[in-house]
Image (cartoon, rainbow, N blue to C red; front, side, top):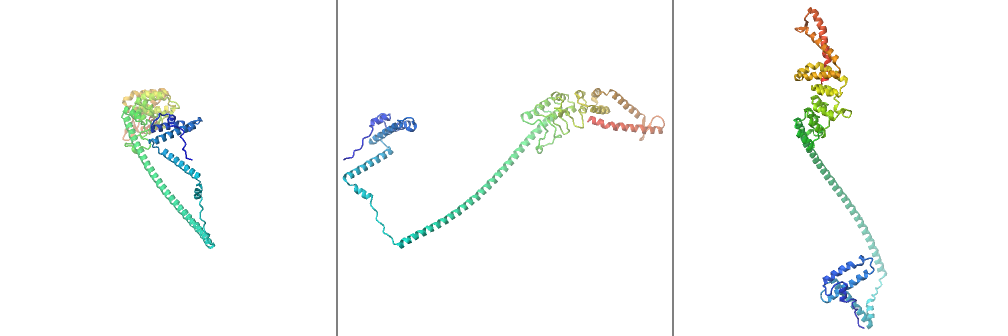
Amino acid sequence: MPFVRPQKPHGVSEAYAVLELEEGAPLEVIKSAYKKLSLRIHPDKNPDDPNATQQFQKISEAYRVLLKHLDNDGNSDDSDYDDDWEDEERLFELYRHLFEMVMRGEEHAFYARAHKSKPRREEEPPEQHQARIQKHLDDQKAGEERRRRERLQLKARREFEREQERREAEERQKIKNSDKKAAAETQRQKDIETIRKRQKASQKLRSAIFAAARKGNVKRVEQGVWGEHVDAAGGEVKDDCHDFVEVAPTDPRETLLHIAARHGDHGLVRWLDGHGAEPEERDSAGLTAFHVALQRGCLSVVSYFFDEHPPNADTAKIYDPPCSISLLSLAVESLEPEVVWMILDKKLVSKEVMNSVWEGFVIEEENLAKRAPTKIKEIRDIKRLLAHYGEFGQQSTSFQKEKEQASSHSKNFVRIGTEPVHKTGSQGAGRGRVNGRGRGRGRGRGRGRGPSASAAMR
């Protein structure tokens, strides 16, 4: 019975129709169409379609038919398809050959060749068998001993390698730590140098601004504080910047506000007060900017402080003078009656301070007039203010009479050599009376009132 090959399940025309192509389409178009359809109809992408598997098999079969058709025409170069078709041909040939052998009755020859028996081994003598067994046991023991030695050697070698790796790792870590320390120290030195450069530049700029303030250059001061961020508070030399000062200031604690107050620059005082200056700061003498303005008689600056910082418990640090002086003595020292009046009118003076300043002023009045001959009118106005607010009318009259009486007594003496002699009466009586009254009263009044006057005028 001859072997008949089964027919193809699809025709070429039907295959083209399944792939949605026209007949005669080239291989590249067929491959592209098959790839698109397979990606679209694949069961994994259509899990809800029960016919997806059947449709996918259908287009796969149509693709195979077209590849076969093109291969018969000599237009196919699909090597994978050729290999599959050749395997199918060989299987057909094998089945055909087996079928013909069965039909001719030659199947026993194939079975005999497949199940051919092996020749039997001859039996060995007992001694040889025992020797072979013993040799096998000896070889086994020797192998075990050899493997034991190899394990020990491997263990020792691994321990040595681990120890060596540990030492190398420690050495690498030491080098790494040393490099880190060196890098950190280098960076630290760089940072220190950078900081010192910044401090030097900052101190140089600050000293320039203070120099401009002392010269009255208001625009440069405002530019430095506002535009170049120079701190308006504090003295000229900042902390940790003493090494960068080229010329040490006379008063390192003197602030820009002190300088402006000393110059009587009311506008700069106001501007600095609004841009970071601290009115409570004091110079080396313990004076605030208000005290400096008061001592200098800068009326506009004193008025500004009274208006912007009214005297109360919160502003006490601005107005409280050092222990050795008083606000009234600073005002009197300015020889400006209006400044003295402001202190008296604000009631910033105690009765004790008033008495002390009054006594000192009365004693030093003539000296003040000599030192400031152009300020005689101001000196008299100050005296009237002190007398009015201190109610020194009667005390002033009696004190003045005592002073005039002492002056008249001194006129009744003349000096002959080094001994005082009274103009009237005998020399003996006059000499005794002069020694008794003149020296005692003169020294008593001078020494008793001297310290109080100097303390009041400090």
